Length: 153
Image 1 (tube, rainbow, N blue to C red):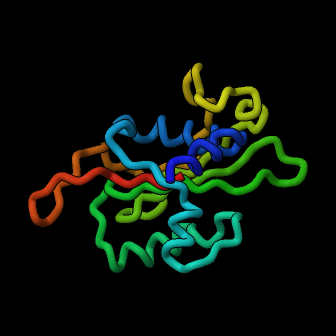
Image 2: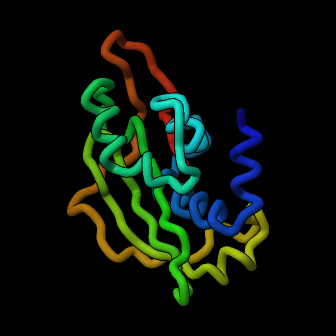
């Protein structure tokens, strides 16, 4: 299942996605990272391959049934590079809170980076953030069990 995550990092968009994840989730090593297209396929049996089916509306629909706690399910969503644009626009979506950050990265920075980001995350420009995004915290389920966080890229 994780080969899709490795495949994603081979493309510049994946380097941007992981840069946003690394900057927003300092505890990423304790989380389970999943490819969002796979998740979309699992939920509805189809996707267009462009991410538009797993935006904040689908995450809100999942949240109505799953009732995730803040920080428990975090999604980084990115728009394709627009014609003539030098940036890609992203959103960070917390299932419990909705969109908590919007921003951009320079596509040239993502193209120049190696897939494993040996020099750290590429630069991003935050254009909006929620007033008080939650700090990363360990999630304890309703039955007292500690579970890994889920992250979609």
